[in-house]
Amino acid sequence: MVMGIVNVNDDSFSGDGTLDFGQAIAQARGQVEAGADVIDVGAESARTNRSAVPVAEEVRRFAGFIDRWDEVWQGVAPRDQSQIWPPILSANTWRSEVVERILPSGKIEVLNDMGGLPDDRNARLCASYGASLLVMHSVGEPKVPHFEQKWSDIMGEMERFFDEKIRLAEDAGLGGDALILDPGIDFAKQRADNLTVIRELERLQHFGRPVLVPVSRKTVIGEVLGISDPSARDAGTVACISACMVRGAQIFRVHDVNAAWQAVKTLAAVLKDRL
Image (tube, rainbow, N blue to C red):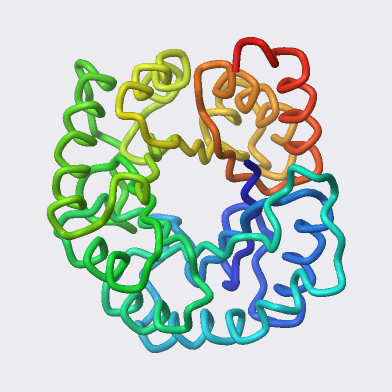
């Protein structure tokens, strides 16, 4: 599955955010036409050198997009027969105060929680409204840099983390088939950690949950390639998608949907007996 990224904000790290709802809808529509199965909309940047926007403003931005969601896919034909249709709407937020105000719309099918699920509130809200929950591995508060975080065994720690969070979510009433795991590339991880996660990603398969990889244009790619401009990292992104797909990842969160769609389709055809 390919998940397209739409940022309804003015400080996206990749420079593609917009506060114009019409432009955001047009971006999402273009991604759906390019083959996106999921559109992940966020209303504030995850950048740690930016403060969080007020709750009311984040809700307003979400509402402006959600109210026009049907415009994204109505009148558009799926790119191929395997594309999920209608596409899935995912909301990228972590504050339960926001979640409880946007899930009642009934249009959001996935909550993309970058907060690491410190308590069960978002899991309970997802269970109440029938949404799936994406749990991202990280430490500490979101929107706070963790450049000094050190891991002696990043994969062992990640397995312990997901063991705990899966139990927390299930105890809150969220079924196991409604949980998605995200290794959190670049979040509280340094270059060596990120590369280890990609190399050993198959260790997460024993949880029996879909694994999403949000590696698009990430800092680790820029560090490997010596490219400071995030928008110039799409070739490196495709390389990481390929590496993660052969290691069991099933969902890829990307900026360049067309490139990712072609990579996933080609690799699926090449490896059809192994996937």
